[in-house]
Length: 523
Image (tube, rainbow, N blue to C red; front, side):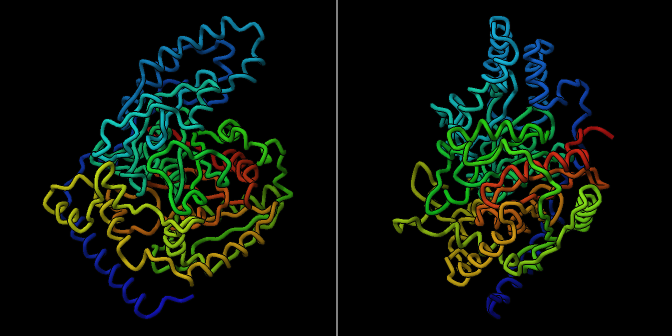
């Protein structure tokens, strides 16, 4: 499928207008006063432990409730954890020490029953966490408090994890910058003038800054992977349908449940597998998570870019180069051949994502309009009216949310039969390529973490992550060190459906090879 002349003209005019607005924005924007600033170096070694290491030390009584106290202080210092239950967390930490003293079965019994005993956990605010807000940045939902735990949150708590509180999101979780008019803006620990991503940006920020040990996110267009990429941590978008998506806000409608995935976020690759085993609950046996992976027996592929989409910007040279280095190391270390492949359909990643997000469910019911969600619990908003109010400084909604409401009114959001055919062709080709033993490298984003508000002028770059959601494939986002500006680099590692264990094994290899997470404050 090629864009028609009229569509190409529309895209060109849109980019020209956005370019002009971006130039005006940069000219008129006042300095944030935090450009180049980052978090101070970590001074307490306890903050640099993985969940696996920490839980072991707690079981062995080498670490007590002091750890949670240190984590609380760090979280208060660096992140927009807009509502916390730190006092409750400290009480739970004290109970952990008492539980260990009373356990007569020894360390192995505790490890089997409570594998995350005492490990501090942060939770994306879109998930229900009992007693915590569940507004997802919407002013009209201020005061909404969860009365239950979302299933994966409950499972992590049952495994011994201690929730610190909920973290910030973009308004209604549908933008790549975690900023809203209810809780404010969340910053990147590597450069406070840059975004941490979205919509799980609060999670990316608090994990990247060592304010929590593990976290939980949901991903329908890159909402786990972009924050993990921008903040230099690991995240896994599971095969859809494995981890429960219940008790999240906003709710999913139409066919969106087919594309959203809940998954783990953490600083260390070794924590991904145990977290996923817990979060998958009764469906854990659908994945081969206990299967030992021999990387030398896998087939490897790399796609360096989307083929030149008119909707996205070219991939940054640093990201192209680091992906080449991954290919070179794989071939040198494992003796494998990494094949470079190209799929022309990837050029239409944005069109594929927006088409499928708008499809009706099996009963013919379309997704709930975004303008309705913006007005919850009252009447739907009128995006054009909100845009006018925004210019006057009177709107309760962010520019990104208003823009999405306007996009729903445009022809770009209408389902297209030709785009559906493109997706089906891409799905078939991708599944045939990957099979049950294939692994694919694909850029996480066209550039490293942008400065605050800049994504408004490059709104479609998320297509690099969004198209993978529509294909329903598992992906692990892996950090690959820092660029010359001290900003995280990374790559998406993709496998066939239900082959999550392959990408998790690759995460361990890439961490060992490229160093994994780096302390944002270190020189």
